[in-house]
Length: 202
Image (cartoon, rainbow, N blue to C red; front, side, top):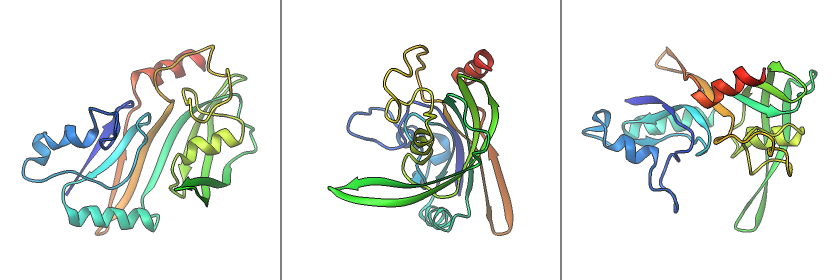
């Protein structure tokens, strides 16, 4: 009924105006989707890598969509940020502002944060978003003054000049949910660039 993939960074989930290659088109032509088509049930930014659910039929697409809506799907992310995140921060709560057709929309965003490693220059974090707002973790970390390494959109001028990375250092690491009393747990290993950064900087 569904597949779980480890999405590489740099590839969008669905086709956009500028992208020639996307996850849905790639999956569509695989054996897994021979007599069906892939249904997107949640988003991962183009730059973000990691664990992702893709449904194989409309019924499960609707099921996952409702599980996401009632927050019964739990995601864990790993991120590397600039600077040392303050030790006393374990919860991020923001009112995030977005604009749709010039209309201002304010949405509450909540995420849990745990520092795995940190030094003066960088922090390696585990993040658990409770709400699912667009660019939530990227915006929230920017708001506390610790933008994600490689994030050009939510960053401070000149901060990334010293060390150039190809992709944003944000990875969807784990996802867990329950269907028909069966617990599902999936874990996706981060890529080579992420691995090297951790080795070199911590």
